[in-house]
Length: 410
Image (cartoon, rainbow, N blue to C red; front, side, top):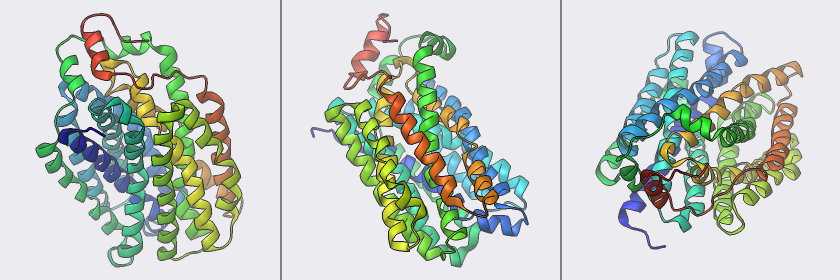
């Protein structure tokens, strides 16, 4: 790969930004049981904090995306990272459930902004032929964050408690120093900065079919990921009664599979196309469902989780490049993140739904996990082939075309 030093720094920064954002998010999923116990409520009541985080992410994508389209990707990314880190820290000081819910909602604003801004900055900066691989690297940040949270839970939870888990979450703020000193602005944004752009609503209206398709697709994708990950630690603790170290081990294996899947299918998408790679990865989940959710031993559950996440995050590994390539040039920092997070909004009921299904069936989380993951895997495969594909588009040249008044493809 003939990359410049600046392109390498951009990729590292975007990967770490999403990794540490996901790290802060997933710290929460390990401690639902403990928070519920301290505040004397049920697990579904605490799981509502996850729902609130997901609900607020579209608004965060809109706010930070518009800031990035107006003022640049780089400064917006720095503000974003500081925001989610500080809110994570404050969550650890919550005196009651109500306060925690408010803070997790605000955390959702910050979390919602990072993905769209970071992916736009990266995809506009790197060579087009490297986008598939880099897409897998960026999306691998999500399971990498989950992996880090698993390690922290397994190694430190018994010493620092659930509040200490949130305190650890302030560490990502240090990433701002790296972005400030090593990461340049997107060349495509520098070109777009020179022209007056249409409003977001006008752009979405012009591309309404693309917008609707993308939101539906991302709703399914978010049910796929959150439906297979968010309550899995609770499933291991509540249904199998595993200790924290065992739960951490299985989730670490799970996330290694997720990283392998994202990198593999991101690269494959450069060969067979974005849509076909997503199609294959999504259907790959079906033969792994039973092993993943109904196994009874630690070894088989770990194997099932590893294989399942190859499928889930394999499909997700193509999403950063896919959404950025099909996005209208003038709103690239806003569109991918917004449709992604609107999908999150529509899928935000997942944690509460799955928890209620499990409770209604005597604590059987297995059925709740399989119903969601199996269904959306099939739906994703069914609809992705009807979507557009603009593999390898030159984003800088496309931005220049828009600047010259010829418009971006609808």
